[in-house]
Figure (cartoon, rainbow, N blue to C red):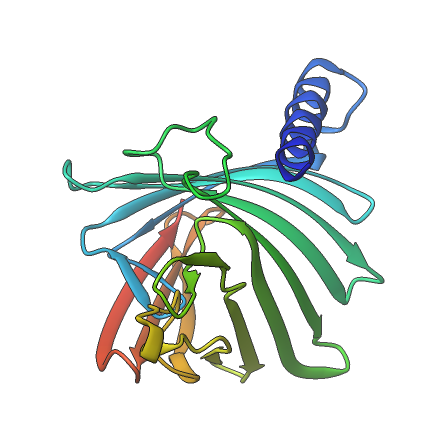
Length: 245
């Protein structure tokens, strides 16, 4: 049944996207194409690529509903690439519910959705932000299927996924944005479990992000973004810069 649900989601995405491409009556502003270039790929406090990464996205949006694909390709030939599908709906411009299919392109086979063998990770995420009322945002994301960290029985055998959960608080200041992310699903170390985000409950993603517009011509500018990111559990720190091209 889970495989059927996943297949339906992919079919919906592909058919809707093809329809959007083929229909002349859809305004072009509903389809957005973006690309970021970042010095490192750091996600929720974890270093996924130490080399510069190109991160394109293609999104179709209409009346609060969005369908899209996001990718990351490292400039280091030995690194793997990532292709993620997502569908989201925003309620009253404040609360967004998103289903994401994360996939690392190698060495896994893309169309393998068997629960214990797939390279896909399906995540359900809810986020709230209302900057006109208060500059605080809140996000909770849970892995619901696929290559999540494993739960183990007392004998060490597989006992399903951990439903790893990540929560993040964000606050917007005048000149920068601050964020604090938590691992909400500590693994059972006595049984040999390894956590998806960290080895215990606590902060795994802490930092600030600032953005500056670089004026290229009188009518064109590039947003330059810099993030100082720390992972207290892993005792790591990153300084990442990026351009939105």
